[in-house]
Length: 537
Image 1 (cartoon, rainbow, N blue to C red):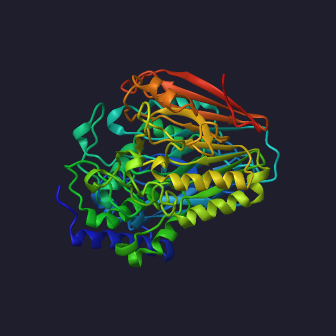
Image 2 (image 1 turned 180 degrees about the vertical axis):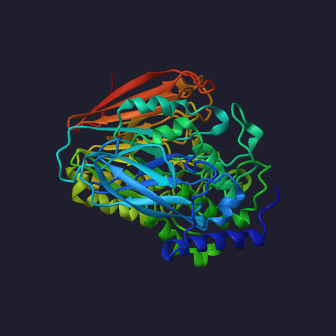
Image 3 (image 1 turned 120 degrees about the vertical axis):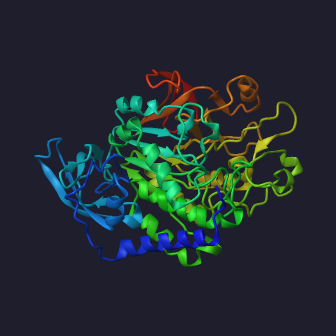
């Protein structure tokens, strides 16, 4: 595949600018009476829940190029009801699925009752979508007995089947927190189980096709239709190991030009919006900066807080879009590397940031507010491992520069803010590393006696491969703030919060290369309210 040309870069911008117009201007609807097949092949989803609103999502697919090219926009009816039969209809309306946004539909339903389950569906002509089930969250001042939240990340098509989602359907969840790497941008050269069609994912159309491939998976569709999802991303939604506006490094065979990365990122961000149950305001923030996209890039603000009564404040963080580039790579290469921080003068530079200055300031302001003190639990969902992990056994250190270890000063600012504002019961959820790591968040990782200021559950992948357990005993001994790790099994985590304690259960499948793989509990842990200590149970 050739590198994107200047013409392609202008195409990216034109497509995104058209999206801005699509959100603001009336559209000419196309008659859908002659659709040749069911357009709801990518399923339905819901997300961004609050106490009185929810986002309902679908994307229409057409069977023929003629249909898709003709349909500048398609009118889609949506319905939300108290019951599966829709005899108790709550709201309904029409939404326009615009070609400029890949015929995706994002309906932001307002005025719903707090803390209640709903059913929803879409209609186009004679076709009706799959049934979706979703819920609103309790009011911020409500006393709540329980929240069951799953966290998951890293679903690589090539590495296995998405069977973990089928098992997750049985977990009686209130919501799913997805922590990044929803798709992978690679071609088929490293396929293990399933082969993705096409080559490297570079253009807007490439990203759209890759999302459509992933969303064609029946188990993933079914889990999306089971409860609302809270979304953030990591790197593979764009390019492996990218950092802010700097290109990453996927492979020597990657044909993309780092000079064109801003435009590739803009295309990837649009495709992400088109395929996720997130609010339109997220995309509008990005579109506002498109005039200067070739210099500054577009923005999608994903970081936010959502309240689950007095039980939990849920923070979604963006640890990829605003970060400074990784440092001390060999030969100044792009991407990630293992680094000896003693030989990297810039490692502890206080200016360097993982979250970006604006997001750091927003989070510090959140920590200083009432919710951070009055919520029983403060849950930070972000894309990677938070605690320090030293890979060198014995004296000295070897740390990975793509995670929080590579941004030590930024991590210290965050833990300092937790202590300064007396944030109640911080719980970090993460992904990215394809392994389960459970441990205590320390105020100072250089001091073995440093106090714990929170707890961490970094989850394994849905399918993506890892290195295995052969070196784990030594690594756990080298990093005693971690109490458990597993680098072999794949699956997800479930956290049950109550006012008195949280219980985290690590759920893993036997074999991701088998569609009929079984699920089991790898380990479970308890944390008591007010005690930053993890108990195995």
